[in-house]
Length: 353
Image (cartoon, rainbow, N blue to C red; front, side, top):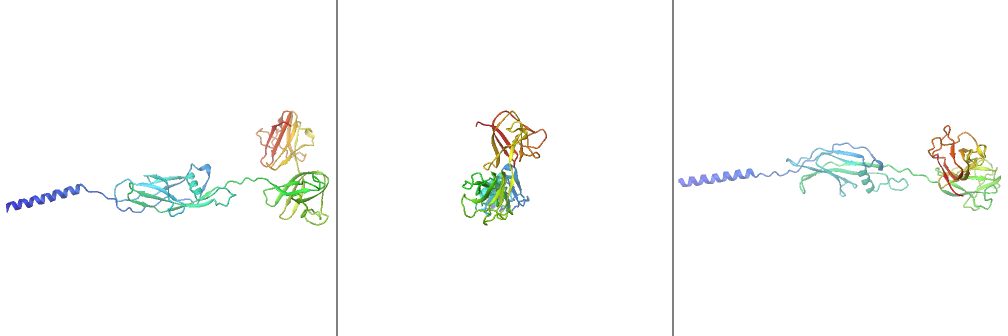
């Protein structure tokens, strides 16, 4: 009986010791994490430009994910063009509660989405993509995702550089440089779709407007009312001079106006009294230019051989101005002189004839 009691006490002691060992080996298992949310507000639209690519486009912040145990949590910023994250791409990883996405990173997504900043292409320049945060513990451990935010972006379209082009229309006639046989004096495009322009020196005589240097469908002005027509006896009479001829095909109106830029001054062939050395239009650069032999002296640019509104370069910076004391000094020689009266840039370059 005594031995039985001792055996029973031994068994109970062993059970107690085993219980203590089990408590010392407790393993904490991460619970299924609770959801967490992005807390930053976003703009209605993000305008993206290459010059600001290094700037922060948006800084994302969020509440901490709770895995139910004390552990280090990593966060991935993910983005998706499709929006359902079947095409998920990692933007960046952090262990803090904020992460930035740059304008450059947004531009990369925009271009992958097919957006285009070229205004001349059919591709859109506006679109959107989705972002979310992924929280996880270790590799292959529990993970949870935040809510999704939509990022609307707009690629700033590049300004389309307008370029002048030749048209199929021209001036023909006894007043035209090449007479009735052509080739005709060309018209050029302008920034207005229906408006074309020619810069031409005419003789006293008659002229008409025709297309592709051929007859049939040519235009004149029988009523002399400034509107082109295809009536009989509609040749347009003109006096000798240098003209800008403008046609607006939206209403067939046209006008001829005396128009030329020239060089005047002590350095020019005819001095300060003129007549001025005329500059010819160059459509390839939308500028006026001439080859001229200059003397030591000064020159200016002026319009239609008249004073008022003439140009010089007081700052000697290659940009025409109307400041005081702005005569342009040159030394004797042959020069190619070019001026763009849209931008007021000019050049006087030595050349050999």
